Image (spheres, rainbow, N blue to C red):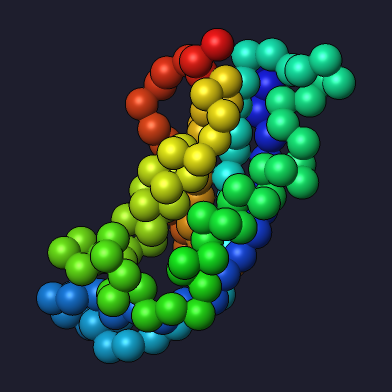
Length: 128
């Protein structure tokens, strides 16, 4: 199994509804996002996917998050925009854009250098 690791970032504000503490107030983060893509084989050039193409798909997915108030996005109207839910939302949105032979192993959202959360999807093989 091959795994590609791609790191990117976006800036956004949020607040945690019904949270008893400072994070209930509006605040922002410079989120770092780590994406791990997985495939059982490489193409004829020896690549799972060209890094440029993978980065384009990831950036396209994150463009709706950058410099936004996350609570106002459809994905977070009912669900708190916690680091955990941000990782899951990015995972699901990116999974819908990938070629069928590539799966997402994990998405990690870092709200600071020391605090992050990962979403790991159900183990499944890419569609070959």
